[in-house]
Length: 284
Image (tube, rainbow, N blue to C red; front, side, top):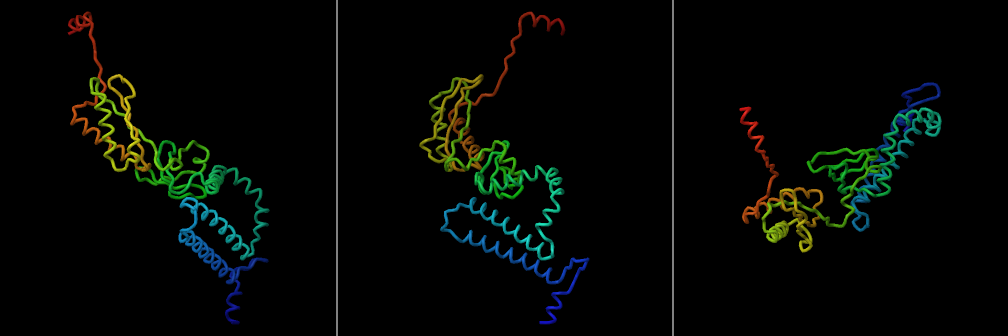
């Protein structure tokens, strides 16, 4: 025991009144692993407790907040262990922190926004967001940035301030099913009633369309070169809805071909005056 005590009290660094011993290093390592173990227990408790009323996003947000608090306490204990007084450190570096704060203003803004997201629960893990026209499913909400996956399966890092200060559509805050639409134009002279019937049949055939009885096709306008229709349907497959729309368009196109219904393309007619024909002949 005496040998162990001497080993732990062995001074690695001694500068003036400051001393770093083996015991200090062992204490820091112990605090680190105890902190990791506590966080592992908390995370396991969240995952194992299926009886609670917290959804996945709320549980994740609560765990992140607890994790940050525990790490702040752990780091403070580590600094105290090696003889650094946290209160004195903060007081002594107040002027420096002001300068750093001005330089990292946007970073602090993102951090505050991250805390708002975690506390407010307006955005949770698993939510589908429309951020600047890019549809993203949130995978992780960090203290400064949030990580998401867009429809091209590209990982996107979003500054938290972008979510809290800009206009962002949260598709997951809608009801379980969301209304979508597909616009279709057909050639003038087409049977309007037949087109409406085909559109309705096409959406009925897709397995990922919900509330099929509420699906509706409308004749909405007389376009410049087409009769314009709109197909309305409900689906809960929000993130991959473009794939669903593509499938429905393929079904519509197939049925149009079978029923000899044409989809027009823009055309331009040129009319020559009689005097223009004379000018052209002279120049040639």
